[in-house]
Length: 225
Image (tube, rainbow, N blue to C red; front, side, top):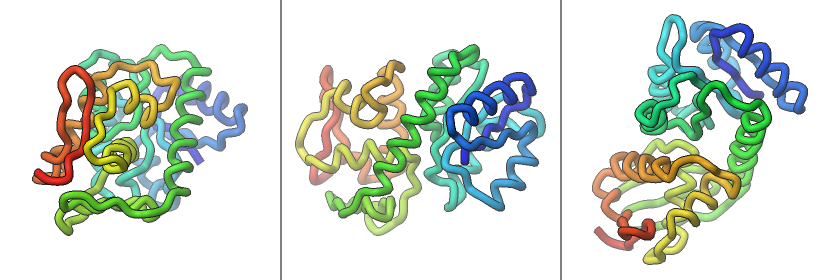
């Protein structure tokens, strides 16, 4: 089930119709209050979230979702008319997995929705555990601890950390990371990666220093601070 929180009725109805026609079960909401009531009953597999909403700003909704245990890693695509780089960075900093500015092509939207759901399902089917310098990442339970303390990560942050921890000392180029984490068809800005690295380092506390920047190339993971 996909939830769509969009107050513009014409856009909401059009997107909902297009997703359902593509075989994706979707439910639209005009107001955040209606969305919150339904969320308490059922957590969706993905959320399409507008920023400019009545009652409550979309970024505030995203912050609340990331603070809840049951929605901390809920895949979220921001869907909004505010398409400046600053707005994109703000959305990604708050934990959004993707950002699509209006006006958008419906086929692009469907493609990104399917790609994000596909990557989520692939990760959930994984297994094993990665340990490095005080960090413990479980692929089977999709959890992360830093020096014994639980860390709530978004789906993309988890994927990014898992990739870097999979080969300590190996330098991953920016293109390789974007392809592995965001998909081979990702055509967004490389700034997206920098934002996620910065947020990931902050969430990991002292362990965030394990993520090293290799200037002009990409990033790597060390085994000690």
